[in-house]
Length: 171
Image (cartoon, rainbow, N blue to C red; front, side):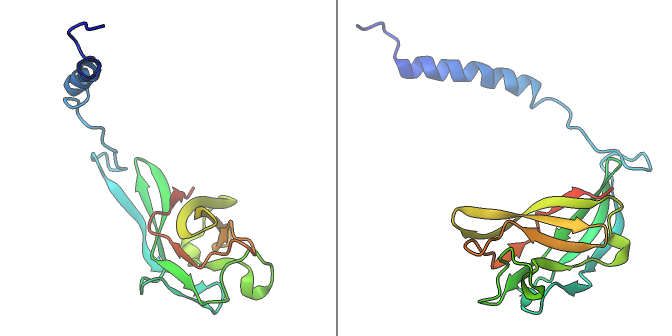
C-alpha cells in the first residue's frame, strides 16, 4: 500500500509544527529574573561568605581532591539558601557505613555558628561514590550546624562525597 507520503516525512512534519510554535513563543519570550532585596533584577545577595567547616566529623576524612568543604548562605529572590562546595574522602576501611560508633557516626563536619540554620534541619542531596547502584546520598545540617550523611549501610558504604551541588533552603 503506497500513499506517496512516507512515515518518516509524516513524523518529521508532526515534530516540526510544535517546534515552530515553540520557537515563536518560548524563544522570543523575555527571561524571568530574580529580584534582589534592593529591587535590582537578577541580584544574588551573599548573606554569609564561603567559610570552611569548623572540624571534620572523624579523623579519617580528608578534603576531596584538595578542595576542603565550605559553606555559605545566599539570598536569591528573597529566599535564603545554604550552599556547600568541596568534598570529603574517607581513608580505606573508614568509610561512612551508617554505624553509630564515634568513628562511624557519619558526621561530615560542623559549620561555624553563623551558618547554623534556624529550622530543625536543612536537607539536600550530594553525589557520592557509586556502589550497588546508588550514586547520591542525603546530607542534613542540624540546628547545631552538624553536617551528617545518610544512605550508607555496612554493605553500601560511602567513601567520598562531592558537596558542590548542595543547595537547600536555609530559613
